[in-house]
Image 1 (tube, rainbow, N blue to C red):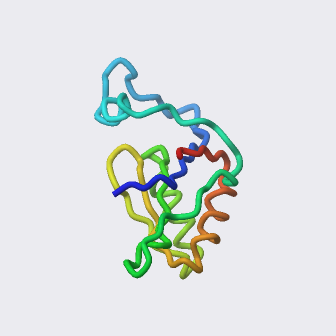
Image 2 (cartoon, rainbow, N blue to C red):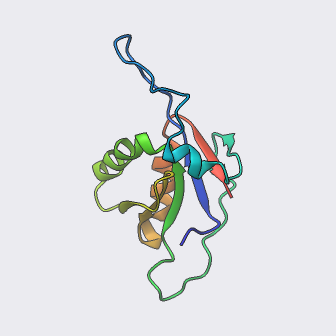
Length: 124
């Protein structure tokens, strides 16, 4: 279940001269899934984050939902794994919606880590 408190990140492409871009005329599954979503607005701040909804006693009160380009999922996951005991990242769907299963105590640290990545976009 995706909650209102979500963020989205985009990381600049770093292509070398020997790499080629995929055929842009051929629609892929990700493009089709994104057509129905509202555009993400760029921001470098997470100050717009609302407090998580009250899930008192469910264990979900610290979960953090965000959106990234699917090709960067492994990159972001490895960064979060480098900070032990912050939380466990999980992909929610193929469009790049992800979540970090963290505790209420580590949620603010997870937001800080994600906000220090190159470019962050909010989706509230």
